[in-house]
Amino acid sequence: MKKTLPTLPFQSHTRELWFLFALAIAVCLPSLFWHNWPPRDAAFYYLRMVREFKEGNWSGVWYPMIPPFYILITGTLATVLSLPAMFAGKLVSILFFASSVFPLYHILKPFYGHRVARSGCLLLIFCSRLLRDSAAPLLDSGKMFLFLLCVCLLITAYRQRPQLSRALILGGAAAGLALVRGEGLALALPALAAYTGIEIYQRCRMKQSSSLLSKVPWHSCAAALLFLLMILPWAMYMYNETGYPVLDRRQLDVIQRLPVPESGELHEPSKTVRERFTVNHNPQTTENNFLQQSAGFSEFAIGLSASTVFQTIYSKLLPELFKGVHQYYIPLYIIGIVLLIKNRQWRGRDWLLGGLFLAHALIVILAVGRIWTQARYILPATPLLFGWAAVGGLALIDWGREKIPVQKQKIIPTIITLLALIMVFNGNHRAFQFLRRSRPNQEYFHALEAAQWMREKGKENMAKERSPIKSTQRHYHAHRRPLLLTANRRIAFLGETDAVFPDMYHYGQISIKQVLELCSDKTIDFIIIDRQWKRFYEIDTEDLTEQPEIVHLKNFGEDSTYSVDILLVQPGELKITE
Image 1 (tube, one colour):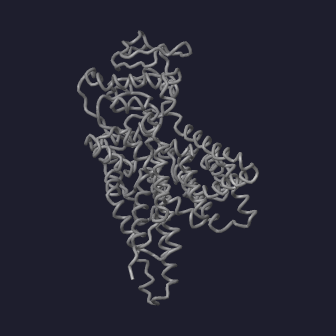
Image 2: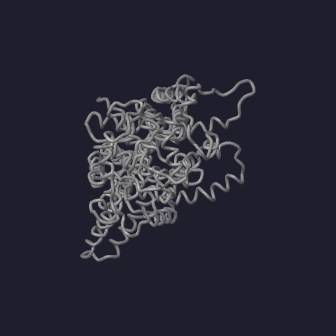
Image 3: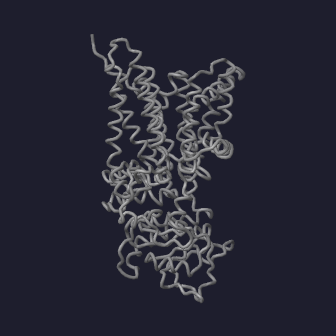
């Protein structure tokens, strides 16, 4: 008799799943090729780090606030294929988004069947908000794939016998989840613990042997060992940089608020590390105040009371959940849930998937957002609810087939195709928007011109040769020159420069005198004042005794209080009144 290979999650309906994978990539192509305006976080951190990785500038690659998973994969791809950082970042994000159809299908199929699982994958592909975030060089699609993969492996492990291959895949996925975003560790550890519990349960059910040794969760031990080996290099780097073996600097907020035993003290970072990650110019707040203001577990994890929990759920959880369920699908969720309850088909599967979504949202809210949380932080778990949406959507299609005459039923696929195209356009609207040189895009094109000037003439026009500056606890630096003082993170990235952003120093209103003070402290090479600056800071140009020599000039228009679109000057050219 032929021996069969162990059953892995991705072996059924292979062709159909690969078609869905290709379709997911296809709907992202407009953003991949036409959208070159990076998101703020990507321009501030991720893409700059990928660029330094590709160019071998290792001092600008790693930073304690950014786990290394995305940077390592994207930087490697950019280096091997000689791709620009922006293109490589979008490509990696899109590949993770497309790969998510595999674990999602195998999460939904055992519970709802093939038809609902396939429809759930289509809802994932055409979810405009997921599409928009996944076609951008952000971390969230990688987190979504790894989170869904962990859930898929846990469900498969519960339904089948323990397998070493599945355990090792889970260990690797959990390590990737812990290294892709700061809150990933709080998701990875419960996944490993759940797998251990499942394996113990499965081994206790097996009647092959009653020995205690046969009930030891060896596979879970192997998964945990692989997990530790994968996170160990980054934990060692973080220990060297911060004094603690954490995976994200924001996790220190928890550690530093834990009660210290009387017999000992928490490890203190070395003096050199403390000096490196200390803000050396901060006129309005101290480092301790910053740690108290920063978002993290510590606000909620230590000393929770019943009133605090209730207030958190009422004022934070419900609004954030609404942001994270993708509002366009809410009617489908409602129809699906009502039908499942009405037909007495509501099962433990629905409680499980809904509970996992809520647990993920609560962990993210407690870990990331003390005041508010971006929707893209909640969205990676939203596909768990697409089974309900698929049930509702298929019910609408079946109802239409019953009510609409046969000769007119061609309208159903036409409507579905039209809705899918609308969702694709909505998910790629920024790519289509920037194809037109219309007035709303003037800032985009002018910023590109300013960035081109920085690349071509910036170094030539520097006052003198200056050394790069080091990163601080709150501010990442790419360790290169020229150094800009700007509010426009995109110009800093596209211009291939390093940058200082006043908002990192808690400036709300900044005078010309404070601008010069900051320039002197950081040895700034150029200043860019544009609409981005106007949007975030108040600065009175009347403080200038004379108009400085303008390096780059574009007209804003009659609706602007500024006479220039891009005011790019050197600090020495600014004159102020006393």
